[in-house]
Image 1 (tube, rainbow, N blue to C red):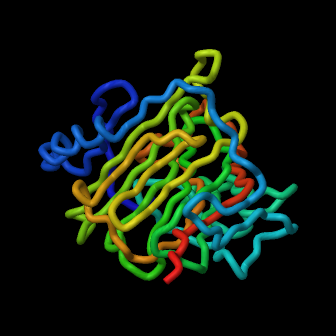
Image 2 (cartoon, rainbow, N blue to C red):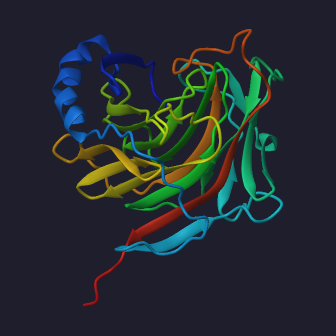
Length: 292
């Protein structure tokens, strides 16, 4: 999420390369072939993930939150107060915009000004960090112009973009039929690079899936040599260490809803408030250790 201004370069249907600066066009072209090879443009029925946590073949469940209580578990999460933001966003992040209701984590964006910010929203991240693993969450997204919900991984104590950033899911509130994933890296903001991919899919009846209606499951499998991204069980992007440095820096899980900014533009007369992102569960698996 925290990054300089972004611009989107359309290429072929469902495939996009995001470019940081005009001088990065050659890099974008170089990575286009990578993305084309990595993408699965699915038109298959979506699969619902089980609501019951269990180990997956080759993976061991090491952490989860099903939000079964009446408030956020502050042993697991840090709720942030953040006034300043990147990307020309317009929200003030406040802990009171985050709650647990009916077994769901809720992040609410509202049009209540505070100081010089026009909107309020919420952002939280885990106190624990992991080096590699499978990260999964079942999420219902907010909709309407200017919403920017995200589920992502970043180091807690390393300046951005050092250590890399893994965007498991981002969504534009203005586009109900597309979600995206990305990997960011670099030694400084100026030298920052990234790969991203837009994902859309048809349901069993051939209609575009509306990702803002109902819950969907978003996954990243981060391993030493590659990162694989999935939506509802379907793979849509793979980044390998031949294409980008797959950092081993431990990362925390982040959930937030930005309002306005460069990704989806600012709210307008069509925007409806309040908007809420709901998280049914979040889970972390790590590779099983082989017996010695």
